[in-house]
Structures are given as structure tokens and as C-alpha cells.
Image (cartoon, rainbow, N blue to C red; front, side, top):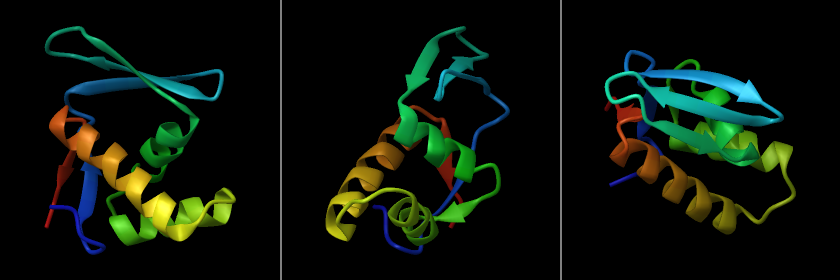
Length: 93
């Protein structure tokens, strides 16, 4: 379960990433599969160059985009949950 205090860390060991036209493409090094991140997911990926909490990620996105806090939290929770399921991120606490 993702809480405001949940802290996330990128799995840079298993994924190689590159930016292409404001989006990020990731290659899974173990199975050579590719994933594409849209512009908002790219910002989240960039923010996570160092581990960050859900709360810090949401606050950064609220400063960057005009969006209601509840909608931002819901969408960030969904993106982070998907990234965790795909082993792109891990929850460190």
C-alpha cells in the first residue's frame, strides 16, 4: 500500500533509460523488453534519481502542473504502483 510516507527508489540495476522527445524509454536489461513513459511519468522518473517519498513527488508535480491535489495524488499513486509492479521501482520503507 502506498502512503504519503512511502519512499521509492529506481531500479537502475535492471533498467537502462534514455530520454527521447520529452519522454523516457526504458530497456529491461534481463529480458530486453522496452517500456515508454509519457511526459508526467518521465518527470516522476527524473525526480527519483534519488529516493523520494510519495508526498515529495506529489508536491513537486503540483508545483509543475495545474492539477487538483486529489487528482494528482490518485494519478501518481497509480503510476508508482505500476512502476513497482513492473520492478522499475522499489519501496524502501
